Length: 314
Image 1 (tube, rainbow, N blue to C red):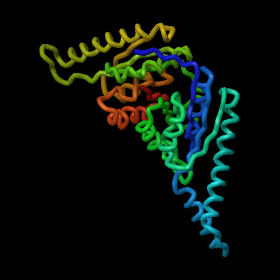
Image 2: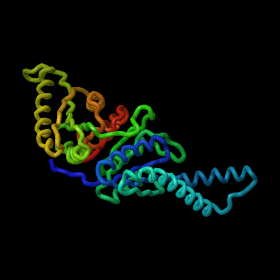
Image 3: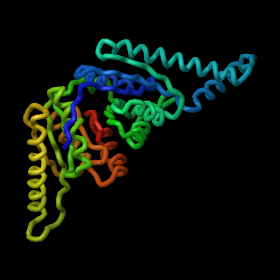
Image 4: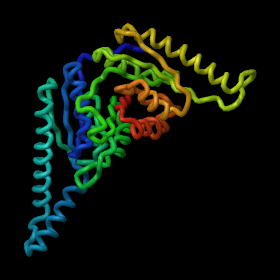
């Protein structure tokens, strides 16, 4: 495992104007409290919004006995109005973050939300995306679940996914006290370790390394199904304990391990709840046999079932 340090952060926070999307902001603020941080707030106006609003305006003017005028000019005016509205919205949140971050910038883009988020993240190699999922959709809203999934598929940048929940279900000021890094014995899954342990170090957070084991359903050789499952757990503990010894010095404290048995996504969610985890860290290509399966399965299921933020990295 290569060691990684975090001396600064460059966060990209996409917002769509909804209160659910804004639930990513406290987590950006929390990270900004760990090291010097630049936060970029991005709002993307989806395709078709300008044309739709111009069309609605024409209908309303027509009903009032008036005409719209030059369509191209009206589209440009509407685009400028949306740009101004979005900048005002972003600056409001930027002002609230200014005392917590080293620098706060705002950006408005017109295009497909997931694509524009990936492009904006790509402007800086060290960008971490922080975004909420499962927001409401509408004329100026995104279907945040599908946008988040596409960002995970298209971007190689670390992405912290925060599940949007009712306000009463989550503290207003999140903290990073306990982190769970999920492994599966593969080198690709271990790519989550450098960033995960570096964040744990600056946050002085406890680290739990966890590997979920599928239960053996039938006897293997001379071992019963239960005995075979037990042996696999022993091997997993040996692997995790070896990794824990290697990173304990970097984290600055003892690293614990756990090996739940069951379905991967379900056990990750349940283990995080049992251990009161504040952030789950998982490798972009780990904890499954393929990127497609992982992104379409484990990450999505974890964010749907758990209120614990999920950092996809590596």
